[in-house]
Image (tube, rainbow, N blue to C red):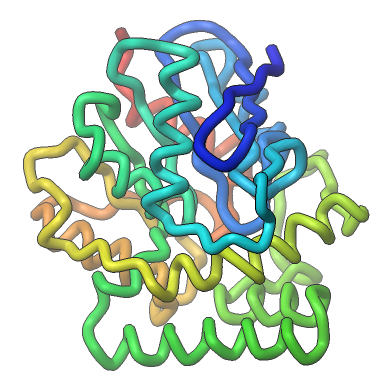
Length: 272
């Protein structure tokens, strides 16, 4: 099912697939509702999977594409999407930026999220000062590359910062390719122009994350252990005094290893 919901300053597109307990997926980077199509196909037999285009991406048109956006605003948007699907607490899989959005949702709308799998959240304020400073420098570098050389060069810089080597990463067989179409290029432009700044200016602290919330911190098995998103996942686990869960693949394991990634999600999402 494909639907839309109007929110303050935008019209959001969302998709609902499958049956069972509701699982909202918050995508990473420039990913839209279709980005996790392989992952969804391995979850929809047991879960009602909700994916959506974040504000400014693909079919979710912002009234003013140049207007600044915050991660809290994205959390408000995600909550609006979830309300269209269920009035009960739901599970959420947050991937990178999507994990930061999920953490904001837990802070602002704690009754909406039953459990959050927070996979390598972009949460710079969770880091030790030296790590946070380096992360800010690297992300500012991505922004500078975008301004000077355009989205394609900046996309390569994002991959390098996250420890992703698209040409040499291992994958499961038969995964769906995501070529650089005009739409994906437009999504990268929005992500680089708006969401990088949202991550750099986000003020959510570990102290804002409720220790009694059901949060499952997660990292990629092959992610660089000095990556800022990996370190943020470890810091979140330490704050909650729970073990960090290791998922197949690296930062983008949901794309490279969707079958194994889905199996790990199925193991962690409670059955209703």
